[in-house]
Length: 264
Length: 248
Image (cartoon, rainbow over all chains, first blue to last red; front, side, top):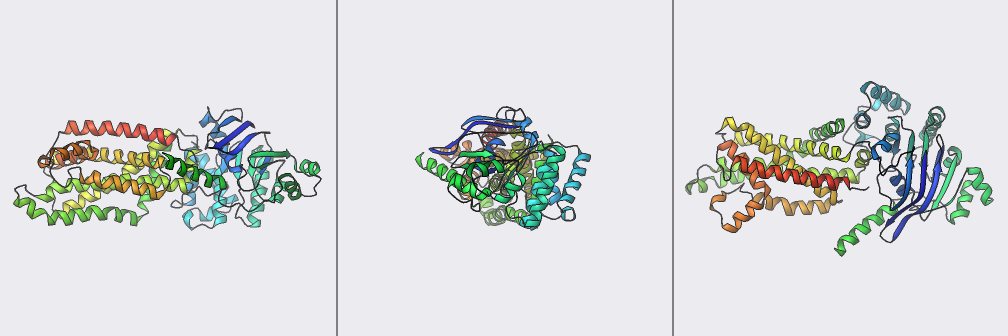
């Protein structure tokens, strides 16, 4: 379903993603694990057409997103690490806006919106402005929106960041159900080790822009002789995973832009 | 085309829900209308130039459209910084539609602001002498709105932070306004000033609105409309190109 070959992203002299290759099969839950600035979000951005790769090939459901952009975009849904909702619109308006952008027929759109908002317990709050929502509610709405157009692939960039354990459980229960019943392929990044261990069929560990290991959680533990995924991660990268801060790569991009402007 | 429509509606909803934005956008044009209109009116009349309010009102209407239109670029920067732009950029919609929706939305808001300003001008004593030319005035108002919304979007596609955008806008907007013939007749200015005014796209907008509403032209309707249409086409093309190159 996802095929990545020799993917590279450079910002000037800095290589954010260095020649990574991996495959994600249809119906698989694939987790990308890595410390801050490892290149997880940059990879997701390249897979979802937000960022142009420096070199390498990406294939989504047999399509080349660089050439067949809009066809490829129809195939996936995405939940970004930071909120991408419009706070000045209500929850219903935000999700309805998404459905219209994806050209969903009105009846289907309304049915799906009701279903998803009920699943994520937001139906009663649908007419409230998103700017008044808590972090957890915003996250739930983003996830509901990402699933609205029944995508074949769902990209989740730190989807449970800031969610309480109950909502986190609820999300994964729903995602696993969706994955099992509709064979939806899930590509996720997370820094919660136990979450990756519990949910993902396969994991790729990325550090300094390079994939250092990939396999099932059991394979990674076996490969490193570690009892837990956290220890396996430590052995492979030499560092513990930390809470995500503001993206280091984003900071670097801003600095590079300023530097370039200064040189002109 | 659904995408264009839904983006336009979004802009209108955001605008209609922000009273502060509506009122603050009227502040400066109103100050010019009342302060200059009534302050310079007697001097203008004594100089044998007639009623200054009649001359100034089309300029102030154009100004309110200019300010609102250009600052819709800030919305793009806002959407980029606070994430909403990503939602539209990963949607299966050609970026030209996204640009079109945003531009139409911004232009509609600016146009509405122009209508409100027109009402204030009428309340202050401005009188439309050519009722039949209202359609012409509307056309010029639309051209000003689209032109400067496209300019705002073009600049916001290149500048990604608020401070830089506001600095550039401040550097650009005031000279555009002051050198457009909105405040003084261009017939009496020096040749240098006349050249500068001719290079200013707003000059043709103000002349078009003024000519349509009170029948006083510096150029002609065809000339103004032709120049404005050409600039609009260039800015839309440039804006679409730069917008399509945005990477997040």
